[in-house]
Image 1: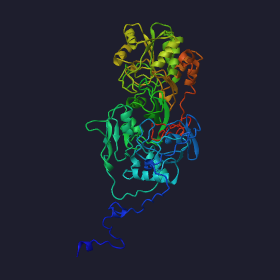
Image 2: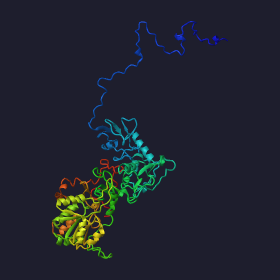
Image 3: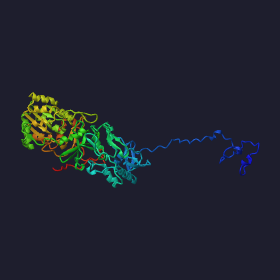
Length: 628
């Protein structure tokens, strides 16, 4: 067979004749185009070379793109949350915005004063401008946005998150100190309320990991919200905590070789929304639902942090920070937290006459009534009135009301012009809240003394004057001394008359010839002036221990024993009558400055807690004191 036979074309196609031009379409090599271009007509105009370039896009309209409509409320963001219109400042997140219209969005990891982590995912909500659910803590509101926090999809998401968080949780609520304050309990009852579907054992971790001298960690209860880690990094700027491990073995812990020793370590217990971080001081001491909370002021130093005092019967169990933007925001130091212990132990509970230091230990002190004790003090002080042998010692631990009553009595009745300043000794300060001055009302003492025209003298001059014999009698409004307590007690033994109004037993009170028990600040109403000149009110928690009464009430009794008609019935009466002498108190409204005895949940949230609800806040009006 020849080559021509093997290469014969099939069908009707014929090979080109010899001598035919090779540039004809039939002679070109390659596949024939499926849609060949149509041949131009004979009378068509020639096509320009540039006709192959793509056409230019249409020009925009002369006015530019349409502008969005102006905001409904200029300077603010207006949106809709659960069918209710919300007007907030730009940058406000959805959690805070929803609270303004009464919609609660649950959260664990979010805290208004910490950076946003958005890792607990229980705050996911539906937004009109997002295809998926968005974390409400991390997402700022946009103009015209519509938020839905109660749709079936959102509810199922919350239930799923709760099931996930409780999957490996030990569920040991019956022995947990956080019971009654725990958001795992509250959110489980509200959003989940189903039995666990876990098959097999739970992941086990360290049940009692001691992080430092004041904090213990239960790693099995931790939900890894990282609030504690962010707090230590961002607020005191002491990064002593971290997240270690991966997956189900991830845990909060201290760095190897270190401990949680910060003076602000107990704030991690406050911000923990579950029972993972616990105070070693408060652990296993009281149930939250047995405690009542009273707004008060910390007396640990001159900073004057706003606090809640949690108490039961006539004992204080703990201090917690109370929201105060001007002073401590949501925090307080550990030293101030533990200062509550002086309210429970070593108190002077009964009035007495005669030096205890010279009496036998087995000799019982005669119990005096308040009237008898005031009469004994008046009889001891009256002969020395307006004498240079009489001195007055004032403590900067006293409230403004006690100092107003005491220093007015010292000037008008006793006739003194100089007042010696006692109080606690100086201590350590830190870089954040704690100050070196451990007296809560030194500023108030200075203002009142200046308003009354009294001169303040250092405490050391009093000790020298007693030893030199220049001072034979002393009237003490508080027996705290800044230095040399034993040396001052020995000097006080030389005094002929020593009338002391004291809070706690000490070597100094043992030398008093007339000892009058006084109430602590937690047992009465009043006010303090902190170091920056801010005046703060505090409320009464429970009745005074023993026969103790406030300083101003003892002064009222002494006035009565001296034949005066002066009779105050409350700290409010003292302030209203005597504060006019102090110019700095003119603008202070004593009644309006009183903190509310009960915060309103959902309306005025407290960032110090997981949900802003004060622990065990059960009291209304006059406290109900158990066992009294």
